[in-house]
Length: 141
Image (cartoon, rainbow, N blue to C red; front, side, top):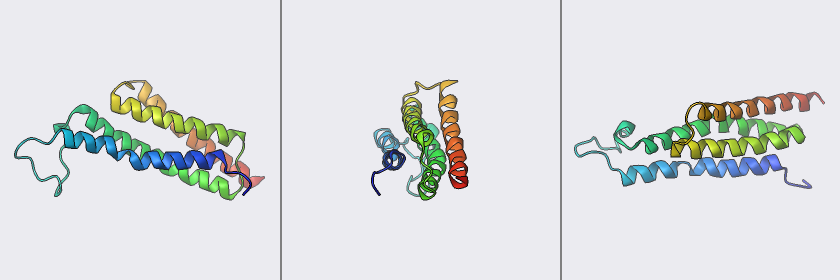
């Protein structure tokens, strides 16, 4: 390999980000223990409604990231396999990364309210669809 493709670099950074998204949730759980008499959270996860809203949002932000990370990762790896990286995949990967960062920050902080949060999520979906197109375009070439 002559150079390390940007798309794989973005995938690496996004993987590290996804692997670290549990941290805000755990910080929130530790700093805001459940009420006295609540069930043991080891046996059954605590009720997110008993925690501050930002902790609940951190949990949801992590789940939202994973929902789009898996398809993105698979598509980037397929593109690498079919040698399908282009200017389109370069920019789509960059946009996807920053949209997912903005989504997570906006979600946890509460800044990304309607309609911004769903717009960010949908931009991520469009990025995945564009990568899917690039897979078929690269495979046909």
